[in-house]
Amino acid sequence: MNEIEVISKIKRENLDERNYFKTLIEAAYEEQVLTENDIVDV
Image 1: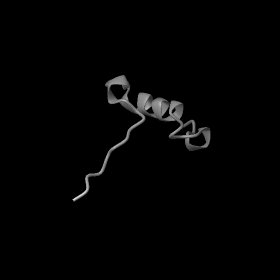
Image 2: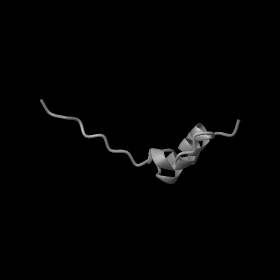
Image 3: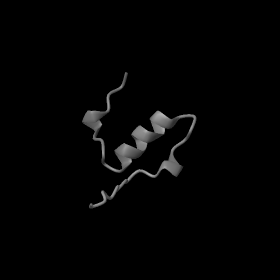
Image 4: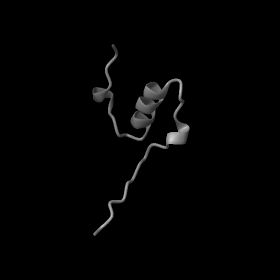
């Protein structure tokens, strides 16, 4: 059986535990996984 290779542009070790969601979104934006249109101010 073939194995699935997981490729991640976002490094977990660069995310802040206390601000996980915020740093995840920021990292996704920096790596162009998300665009400005994907992110909205609440």
